[in-house]
Image (cartoon, rainbow, N blue to C red):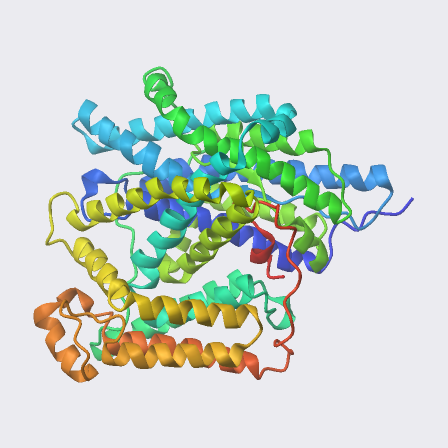
Length: 558
C-alpha cells in the first residue's frame, strides 16, 4: 500500500491562496458593516471582529478539518499518495448579501426596538446568526438532492442574482470606495491582480497572485503614508484604527437570544436562500472539477459538510455561510495535498478565537485588499454568462438591473451619510464617482484594451495603453477632479482643487498619472522579465463551471 504523502512543498502556496481568500472575506465583512461616518447606522468594527468573526471562523475550521479527513479517506480507499484535499471557505457573494440585506437592515430595526446602540447591534447579530443556522439546516437537508436542484432551477434565474451582486456590489462598489479613491496604490494593485488572476501570468516561484498583490499594495501604501506624514503631503488616506469601542473580547461561546429574533430572521430567509442554492450547485461543480483532476470525492459528503459547517458557525455566532471552492485543480497542480487545508483550518480558527483579525484589520489597507474583489466580480459575471444558454442572455442581463439600482441606492446613502451631506465619507464617495465618470468613454476604451492585451500576452502593448491613460489623466481628458471637467495643465487643475473639489486631495491629476505609470512600469518589467511571461495563458476550466465564490483556482496563484 502506498503511504499517503499528505504534506508537500506545494501545500505552502496552496495555504496562502486559501487562507488569504478567507481572510479577505472576513475583512470585507468587517469593512462593509463598519464603514460609515454615522455610527448609529453601522456596527463598530470591534463588535464585528469580536462577536461575529469567531463563529464565522469556526465554520471554516470545522469544514476544512472534515475536508482534510476526506482526503485521507480517499487516499486510503484508492491506495494513492497524491490525493489533494477539497478547499473550503467563506462565500463572497453571500457576504455582501448578508451585510446589505440582513445585518444592516436588522440593525435599523434594532434601533426601533431599543434606544441603546449596543443592544441594537446585539439584536442584529442574533438575527444574522439565526439566519445562518436556518441556511445551514436548509443546505444539509437539500445536500442529497443537489443534482435535482441543479436541474430544477433555471440557470438564468439562479445566476442572474449572483451576476447582479457580482458586477454591482463585489466589483463596482470596491472599485469606487477604495481602488479609485487611492489611485496611486489602487491601480498598481489592481494591475497585479489582473495580470496574475485574469491573464494567468505566473509570478516567479509560483507565488500566489493575490498574496503578492496584498503584500506589494500594503508595503507601497505604508511607505507612501510615511512619506506623506513626514513631508506634510496628501498622498494616501490615513489607515484606519480601532478605537476602544463596544464589542468585548473574542468568544466562541456566545449567549444567543433565539426566541426574540426568530420572526425577523425567518422574514429575511428568502433573501439568502438563493445564495445557499448557488453554493449547492457550485459545490457540485467543484466536486466534478476535482474528479476531472483525478480526485473523485462523494458529492453528498462535500455538500453535507458545507451545510453542517454553516450550521455550526451560526450556532456559535457566525454570520457567513461556507462553501467548497473551485480551486482544487490548481491546488493539485501546485503539488498541494492535505496539509494546506489543515493549516488553513488551524490558522483561521486560531485567528478568529485569539483576535488576530483585529490586528490584521488595522494593518492591512483596504486599497490593497479590494482589487481582489474587483477580479471576483468580473469572474462571477463572466462565468454567469458562460454557464447560461445564449438565448437566455437577455434574462441574465435583466436580472442584473436591480443590482445596479441597489448600487445606486447604497452610494446615495453613503453620500448622504445619515442626512449629513457635508460628511467626509460622503464627500469622498461623491468625488470618486465624479473622477471615474469624467471621460468614462476614454477610460472604458483604455481599460478594456489594456486588459485584452494582458490576456493575449501582449504586456508591452498593455503598458502603452496604461501610459496613454496616464497622459490623459494628467491633462483632464479622463478622471478630472473638477466639476467643470477642464482639459488643462495639471498645475492649474491642482491649484483649483482646494476651492472647487477639496475632497480630491488624493485624486489630483498627478495621483492618477503616477498610478498609471506605476502600472505601466510593472507591465513593462513583466514583459522583459526572465520568466518568459509572454507565453499563452493556461487553459481555463470548462465554460460551464460556475466560479461562485472567492476561492476559484486563480486566487491560488496558478
